[in-house]
Amino acid sequence: MDVKVDREFYYPDWRISQQKAVEDVCAGADTKVWVAIKSSSTVGFVAIKFNPESSLGEIYMIAVDPDYQRQGVGSALVKFALERMKVAGMSVAMVETGGDPGHAPARCTYEQLGFGLLPIARYFQKL
Image (cartoon, rainbow, N blue to C red; front, side):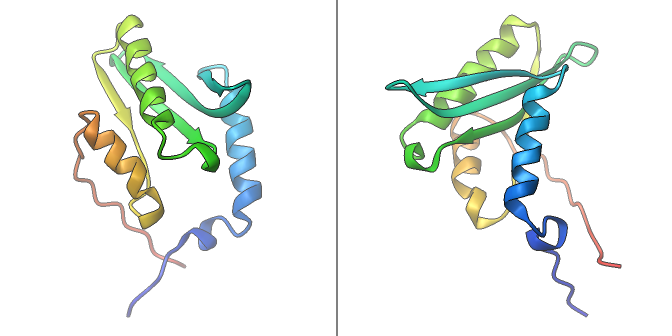
């Protein structure tokens, strides 16, 4: 039996879910957020979490306005985040993203900037 598990299953109203996720990340006490500005317009942001116990820095959320995608904004935000992690004493950086076609540009960016994929299988079953 083939079971399809998709975004709509978990996020029936994706825009509302995404808005809440961004608001929660930006308000989180354990998250540092930086905004990218170009010509006095907000074009993206990156949110980072630091875990001093494990020396792990995590790019917890990154977003670029669709009108500014594929112009180097995402790469600049990732490079900025990596530098902040180094300054904070982190020795490992982590970022997660989707495996779907819509996240292919993000995966490409991370790989170009030296991230390696940790092969993990995460399985789901609709009940």
